[in-house]
Image 1: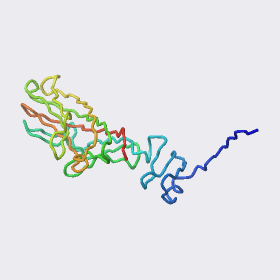
Image 2: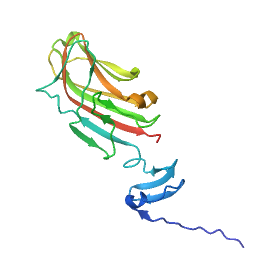
Image 3: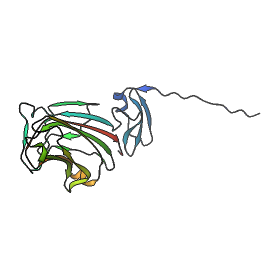
Length: 209
């Protein structure tokens, strides 16, 4: 009589320090305190859970501390301007997360082709002539405005009244985005505006690494 027999194999749970000392071998599996890892295409990849350190996913909140209610940014009429953010305060899901560069061009970044991100942009603004003024917000890279990533925003609270703007864009990373990054631009149409309390919240929702 032939009997089927089952076997239980239990791997040790290593520390991250131990995992990083292992030789890179294609197809290897290791369990650590942060999750389950495998080697694919010559690099460690976290396969479970799909969040946290090493997953390629995460979020960053970037808060501008330069332009405030007492010292706002002035927008000249009909002049395209980078919506600034000096990263004066940064909160991230993991220290490895860095989706925004406070360089000369103030660029949001993409890591890999076909990665998917969501960005939430929030700021306060007012205009002395609200009836004839509106704001235009767009994301642009080396090829100009990225398709479907621009919006016109009306002032609805009246002249010189503080209004909070909150907009969400979803975007994917193509080669142009990788080569050039992308910047957020704002334009005050029809009249002048002032803006302050600018925040970016960027979440990476899908990784093709």
